[in-house]
Image (cartoon, rainbow over all chains, first blue to last red; front, side, top):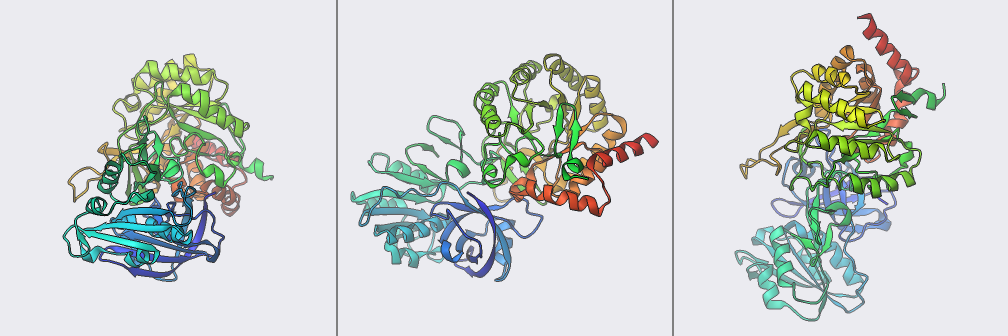
Length: 258
Length: 314
């Protein structure tokens, strides 16, 4: 069940020129904060009527600790970046379906594919799967060296393969380059999150492989609660027939139309 | 005075324990996750998402954009069509909340669509009142053509009234020069009440892409940014037209509710504020008695009488 809780900012760290990490803490009991789910963050200014949907980058529910990683895109996220430790944030969560991992057991090989601000939910997933004993490989794409974040987390959870468009770090290329060069038939579940182009690449490249491929979608949202129809996506034979916030944000690559 | 007596209101076809309801399009058919967070039986009533004769896919994404103090939306009346609504959505709502009054929002592109949709809803036994949507700004011929011309508005209202035994509340568009003229016209057409205001037509452009932010280019503006316009329009209409008004437009707290009553409302609907505060309904219902004490308001019906008295004096 979703709930609204007040969190206090413990720490705000700038990870790259436009990516920030917020470490938050609440005294409330958190339930359902699983990898792939998201929260709706209220901005502490009445000018902003809509909450911002942000993926969960990490959560220790028992300690009431929550980490969010976001890119400054518009006025709302720029405001978020100015907030200092001690400021209260009202957060609605946890929402969405999250990544399914019931099929996985210890030693199973899983592949995470991400780029840019698609990586935060995969950081939480990598940790969770590593704790489960899975062998986690992450393929991450960035435009350039200075935009890299999260590498340490992924390295601590398993194998980390990196590509940059300009070759300033890792392999020169994109996640497609990494998929072409490092694909293993041992993988038994693939999870991807990132820009539309990345998700389309993953969907096309892995279309013929017989393994579950889950894509986590980004979307503008009004409510996050299945009420406003602001985030519809086409799934199966339907046309804009599913709410990203309700049935997603994670969809099977065989079903979702990108 | 008992709490339920203080907040109870009565409108044609609607005996409500309180005047607060979700606005059409902001709460789906009650089948949303807010229903997990509070008991919808607390609501005075529910206005369901617009029903059209045929299913509608709605507009392409993005459908939502933010502006200071408000939201632009161009969802485009997405709904599964009146038959699916009658077969699945409304029975599910009624099964969970048998005592919750239901107002069905009816939209269309031609008079015949409205009439047929209204007829099917009216004879289903699942609906207590109709809200005739002649004001959706987000669909080409999505009803606003009826809401901006007094003659069309009157004729459509009259046509729906002939097929519907239910009270009909006509939802007015603020995108007109003289809203009183439209209100008078639908009164002449036999409307039982008014619902006002729908969203104001707005637009945002993206400096980076040089394109409109919304795929539909324009959208309907809602939220606190439009509240003063809603108050003004309700006030103006109430001076001239003696119909009960369900007020909406930027209401986000108990004081806003009382301000709408002061303008001439008999009930209120809340939309955008739901997205901001998922518990806005229980919050407003808890605050209302306190605010009424603060402003020496014995009951909402007493406030309505006070407003009516002042109009009659003028």
